[in-house]
Amino acid sequence: MNTSAEALTTYSKDVLSLVTELSVISFMALGAVLLFIVVALRWGKENLVALNLALYVSYLLYTTFPYLAKLRTVGGDLPDWYADAAVFGLFTAVTYYIVRKVMWSDFMDEGASRWLDAVVLSLTTTLFGAALIYVLFPVSQTPLLTPILTAWLTNPAFFFWWLLLPLAVIFVTSRR
Image 1 (cartoon, rainbow, N blue to C red):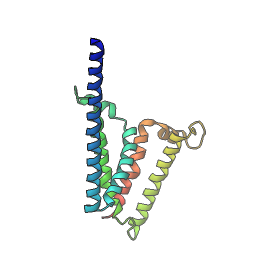
Image 2 (cartoon, rainbow, N blue to C red; image 1 turned 90 degrees about the vertical axis):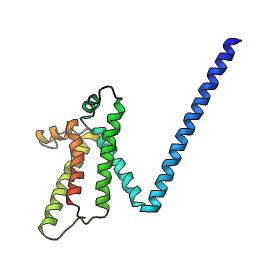
Image 3 (cartoon, helix red, strand yellow; image 1 turned 60 degrees about the vertical axis):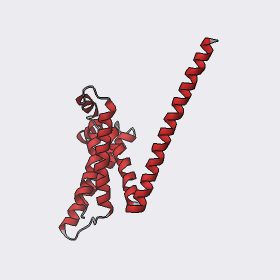
Image 4 (cartoon, rainbow, N blue to C red; image 1 turned 120 degrees about the vertical axis):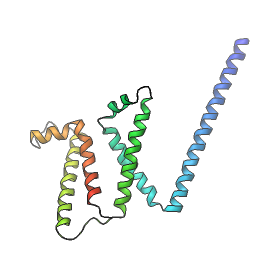
């Protein structure tokens, strides 16, 4: 009987702990929703759109970031998620800034700058699209491009830079 009472006590402590954790998570989620509502009402929904787009881009950059394992060792005894959170937070902050800048910018100036911007943006978009095709589809065995370009586009370490390049060009070519 004593073991049944101990098991019931342990079970009730586990249930109470779970309910407490769920309520804390629920309050945190509710707080985030309320914060985003205030941000949308106070500063406009463009900020939330920019944040959502920044989160998508940050996720892509984070999952392909080639130096994350090295950064995890820098912290010493700190948990790995600290480095993960720092990298993801940095990517989110930078891409949020870029997206906000792009949302209100004028891309095409007059004259030679317009042509140069269009050429550079087109080139980086084409290279990014080719890198995506090589990563997403099994075309690396087909001789579509030269061996050097194939090596550059199929290398997982370079894919991060192919992701980052069009974003950097968009940032540089946007006028604000």
